[in-house]
Amino acid sequence: QVHLVESGGGLVQAGGSLRLSCAASGSIFSFDAMGWYRQAPGKQRELVAAITSGGSTNYADSVKGRFTISRDNAKNTVYLEMDNLKPEDTGVYYCAAGWLRGSRYEYDSWGQGTQVTVSS
Image (cartoon, rainbow, N blue to C red; front, side, top):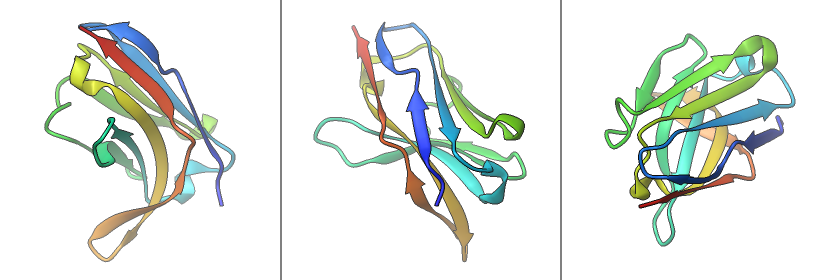
């Protein structure tokens, strides 16, 4: 099982930017997809962005046009560039690695999370 470590979180003012990184202990290319989830206080964990092994991406409607997910297979690292941050983007951001099962991606490996706080 791969070990995932997130970094790059912090406190930023609304309108600012952060870049999250997710470093994997093994090859991320072996996974069908890599994703970024977030969990706000009192809310369920939600998928923010995902990227497949083929490079296809998808985003939650709330972050489209502001967040960009990318991957560097040579470095076994996945990134989440977050621009024009809003207070509602506050939460713990988790990196996850998953597989396509049937018509859905299921994420089996998770990092420990990194806190993102956006002040108004």
